[in-house]
Image (cartoon, rainbow, N blue to C red; front, side, top):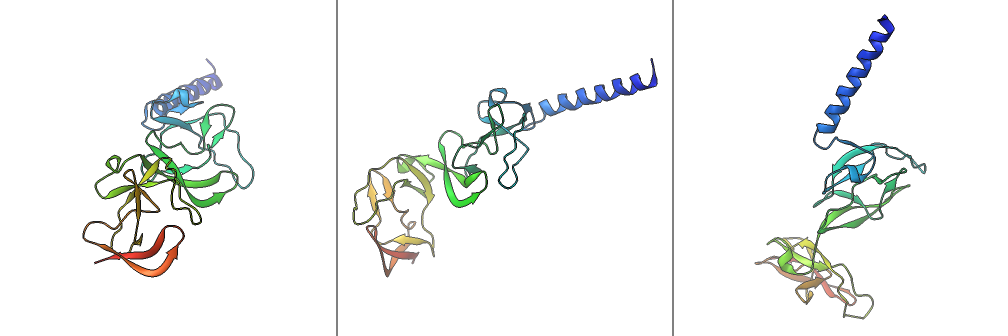
Length: 199
């Protein structure tokens, strides 16, 4: 066996060991589509685009779906020939709420927020806020699901006459127990007077 052949065999053996380790390391299993990953995972590329040029990677690693406060993309970030993502979508029971920050070419980024239909779907210090906000002078709103949001604490913005429909609030959560929304004589149409939570 020649020296060159021995070196090639050694390199091949090291690579095979490296692949085996990558496949067994949590969150670092190599994949070409989300079908290669677990139920609550997606195939996330490690090659992020720069500027206006989107890359076309052929593989990625398995990564957990987004949960509370995870970064996400409002529009699906599929890339490459297979089912690869720049950021994993939110898991079932969560939705990506945009932050208003847009990056090229990924689009608007946001955070995964727990979705809800009733206040009981949220934690004790949260309420369910409708995803749909009334506009203009129209006070009624057709509720299309909501997101779990923290109750107002001292200094939080609030509405003096916060609206509630079918256990879902419109515009924001009320102040937590023991606090009151103190009006500031500034009005939002149609949600009413705005204020600050305090004693």
